[in-house]
Length: 164
Ligand SMILES: [Zn+2]
Image (tube, rainbow, N blue to C red; front, top):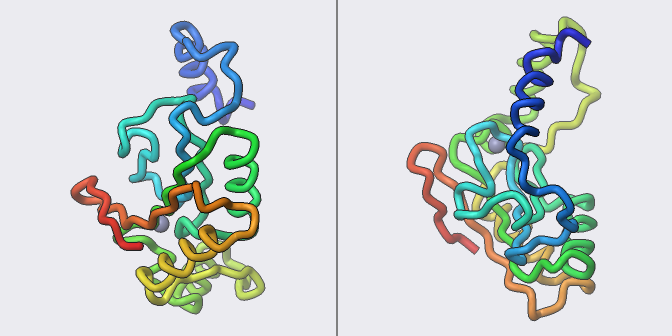
């Protein structure tokens, strides 16, 4: 396991001042965020939250997939969520590449064919965001009392732009 030594060492340091033991799993601020896996995004920090405050679901592009809906329904009914933010971002690889381009790059990196692997690219980020927000709002298990918003996160300014 030596590949992880530096991270486990950091984890021991982290644990020394850990203050969230004994928490339940609810979202204390009532917030759930669906966003991209992008390493430039700090989902809690960008809205002033801390661990324990929010449910976070991440995937390439910050898409409202079936699994995201599953997470949001659980969040709303079991985990205190009453506000949901869907947050794709600027300069996202899955919103600025075609599936063919991603296949070319992954195939070049892997040295084997990657065309069997689906990459759900986004052609029109804002229209896709509006459709994803609609998916959440119209879900039969997400009541109208839950606020749902779509925002584009600017990875260069740190600002959220309300879109849907
Ligand atoms: Zn992204």
